[in-house]
Image (cartoon, rainbow, N blue to C red; front, side):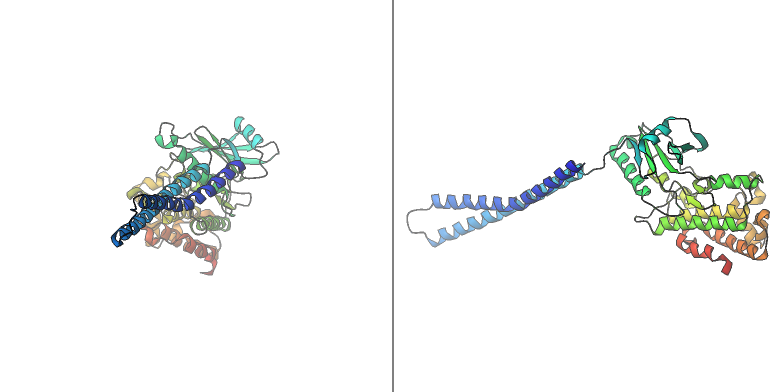
Length: 395
């Protein structure tokens, strides 16, 4: 790699010097030819004034032509140098493990990929595994479904380089409420992503256990989860350069650590990988159906759905919301109750407690409804939502 960079640097300097020298070189050559021709054709008789003027014109014309020729050659040379440097500095397509953590050894990771691991779950995007490396470190492995090998897009090496560069960018992101990419592996047309293992699984897993009375999550913990999710989303939208849109925010992509601290997973992957599942769901903003346009306010709509689930404890796919009496969806049902002044009926009965907490939850319902507005412009931004949620107790 150093040798290649050294050669690229040497070629760049040499070409730069050549670019500066060429105009002068061509100018001198042109002037020399004109002056030689003028001397050879000069008569032995004393020069006349018109002949002198013609000679000066020819010399000036030679200078202009030489300058133009040198300038054109310099531009062409500069373009060639730029293309050569771009070619030499292009990102190589890497195979095998690419590791961003000192705790993970590439060889042990490669071995972990080849053995049977504990299946944590699956989705249209791929399967999730828990694996333990030889040093005892437990990691979560997301093995994505293979890319569509028949697609010309996935056969293009520049696309693969683009995916690789984006993954390396995602690996540099550090925030308490974001899952950090520790490593990735590209095998043929498949990507496998390595993250820290989260002991409490996903928010989807936690809420399912709550509905089955296997887990108790009070309002304090649910509020803590909501605040963490919006802080992570705000960081992606306003602190990253360039900013990152999640594109696929839903409970299965929100992981919970041992203290129920939420961490957003799969940030930006729905846009990054060509055939990653982006199927419409209950968490998809309406503008994505209408115009296929996705903005940061689309992420906010998805957050509104997550906040609604935390408040109501209900699954948006519950058959209840398919009935006409409920309005046909969780969103319409919640709006109807709020307009009718019956917001309390929407709250999860298992978290109704002190009067102060109930007031906070009712205010949180208003925030959720605002996030679920049909028009993106009517939704608050993620950075506005952070103080709104963190300061609920002051309302």
